[in-house]
Image 1 (cartoon, rainbow, N blue to C red):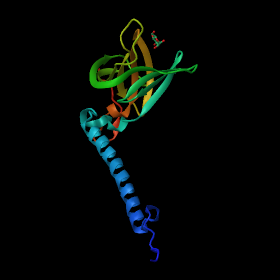
Image 2 (cartoon, rainbow, N blue to C red):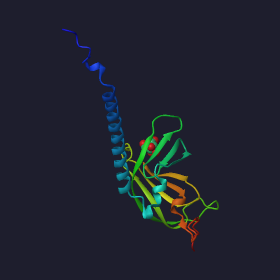
Image 3 (cartoon, rainbow, N blue to C red):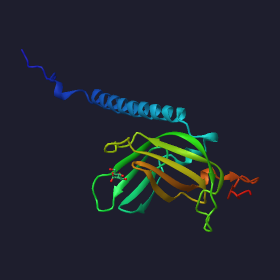
Image 4 (spheres, protein in one colour):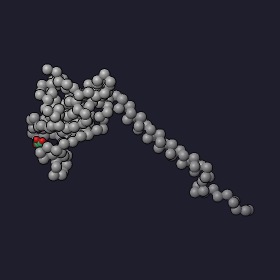
Length: 187
Ligand code: MAN
């Protein structure tokens, strides 16, 4: 009896089957990536980006400034941090929890980098790193109209309770032409 000329071992899979198997693997990984993207877009749509979604443009944006021994970093709708200038680990000053409004009653400095008078939008950050013998760190970020994002001022009002003053075009009133206009203080 003649030996069969056909090799039936698995290693010599028909090339068409091997191609189909590869295509299937690629399609599966594309599908799972798209499922992850879908979940993240769905989550994004249910998040609060404030009145008229004006804060959507600030998503994933961070600004920072140096003050005392720290660099302070603020990521809009995310987290506020203290980074020691000498190096070392950062301290979480709170995670964004909600929008709020406070009434400001201050003279505007000559350079315009301040809160002025009137209702001002606030971003509240809570549940940061625990303070020794105290509460977990929290930060109130008061926003005022400015041509770009700038962290003007940072104060620790009480131990582990911080307040930042920040300029951003996101809170400027729209003029008739739809362009951002600097808010004028009313007496
Ligand atoms: C660190 C900083 C300070 C804070 C103290 C509290 O040094 O987060 O802002 O006052 O811890 O122990």
